[in-house]
Image 1 (cartoon, one colour):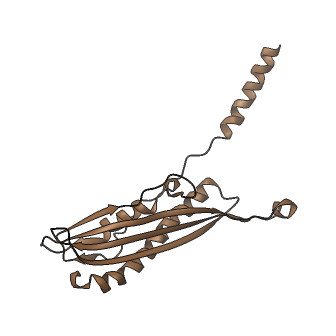
Image 2 (spheres, rainbow, N blue to C red; image 1 turned 30 degrees about the vertical axis):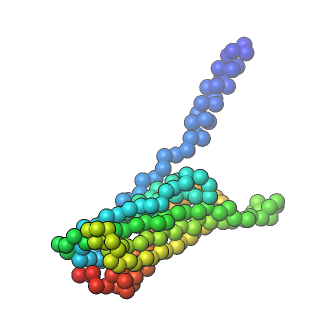
Length: 195
């Protein structure tokens, strides 16, 4: 009798347990920057170096994002920067920061907190880049630096799909901000190399 009861309970629990599975993550369009105006420089080649290393530990969360800022910045470099010279100078794009920090937000407790949907986390993303024109001997001829920050808060009732969409948009908007920030710096500091 006990075996039948245990079997019966097991059969009832299987559909309930399968209903608790986390749904698969959404797929997002590839983040590209071909639509941005190219930055053409009188260099023979372009090198992209990502110096930022994800800590894979709190409070950093870039490793959990559908598109992290570091790889997005690398893609920006490949899509926007163009070598328009035939000399031995090269442009080196160095990504020095591509972090996303999660901060839990204070929420109301008790009965009052039960009836409101508050923002539960804040995500602050930062991208910082140094553009260097270097000689064949690796001496710097000119340097431009730019950074951008962008933040977003997430409501406590956001689903996994909603959170991933917020993260994707955060990276997308961060790189748009960076694109706007870097162009004046290029004009000011690398203007002699613009083509």
